[in-house]
Image 1 (cartoon, rainbow, N blue to C red):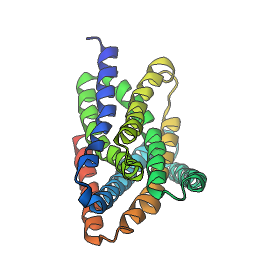
Image 2 (image 1 turned 120 degrees about the vertical axis):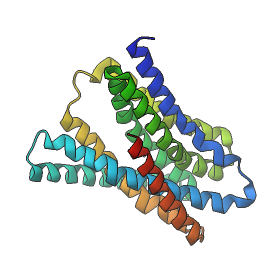
Image 3 (image 1 turned 135 degrees about the vertical axis):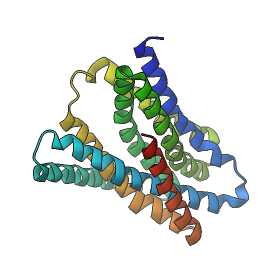
Length: 249
């Protein structure tokens, strides 16, 4: 298998591991509130940890290759603020349409933010695998592991809002496909033109979006189910899971 085909294969497998996130939708309905509360808090821990310990440091590192530290930090801070403001704007528009179904709204928001996250991730995986197969395999494995809880943050709210596993599967599939879409973009257009500033912008903005979703959407919704111990444990487990995934990188 040539490098290009292998790069597409590893990126596809990493992206579609998101589909494992639909598994909680097959658990017993009697534990519905516990499943929702746990899944949302777990996903919140994942998103916050990704943002603080992965996306922001990586965005900062990329900028330091271009500007002095102070200017670099200002740019990254600006990107984060842009991401938070973008998330608030999207949240406001979606809220008007799904105000009677907050779980469905949460699922839709998760799809948007994770697609924005997965596309540059797909670009990175494709380019890395093309350059070094061993690096690509390691990177794809780590991405696959953290894509599973990301899939949960989409599938669980959508399923419990609609009672439709097919719809939950479809929306989770869209998120997974966005990783492959990133690889396609890299192959056709971006590989020659992508630069550190643009990557830093994407990562910093995505971090801002994820921070907003984690703190103002996922965690508060989990708390609404009045299971504080479940919320705290799940949030911590989400952070630990992401730390393990980062260690694999």
